Length: 306
Image (cartoon, rainbow, N blue to C red; front, side, top):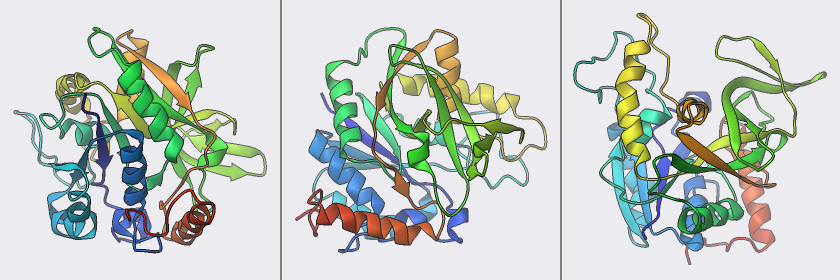
């Protein structure tokens, strides 16, 4: 059974000073964060990579990473565009923000026919995450049942913070058996003298527990889930209030709704690993140092794909 790694790389990167943060080198040989995710995924058993990008990034993207990866595994491209909307819908005037991770993943429909893992392009997840997810997808996931069988890598909230600004995370509530009960997209998460706080989509303050599990948008999904995204996108678009040019079709909200309606179960695959990534320009130095530490510890070779 073919298992696919899907990498969401169509983000604008506005918080990274206007640059294309997904393509910033962080390894000693010019490797970018995606190189390490792909390396770990292939080592875990994945055998195809789908990049979700924007058309205007295609040339740079292929020169920096795509053409190299095509030499070691099967590669396909999907394109997330603002104007890629269902029949009867049009781009609202003034809308420049992407439609969100739900629309991004929907763009791969027709490119996968088996279980697939979804990740962000600018997050480092660690080897164990890919091993655990591939094992679940190939040994436990029931792709035939009517209720969606999903898995998610669960990080400890305290291990996913940036020293250089606030972060957005899918804050999770887990049941005693390790399944996901609820995931809430939580914004502006930061450490204060009184502890960790964040905000909901309306800006209301939320107090958080540093040990809570959070989603870093690493999901294991059956191919049939794409049909759900396709059905739900028009409903989402119809619900967007006139004049709202920022609302997004987000995977955590979609999955949370499916859990609560009894249409999905989600197994949390917990990891103690510390996340790192390039959310802000100032994060790059820390990522470079972290990669260097992993190389010195023997986790990676100096030349990653040698």
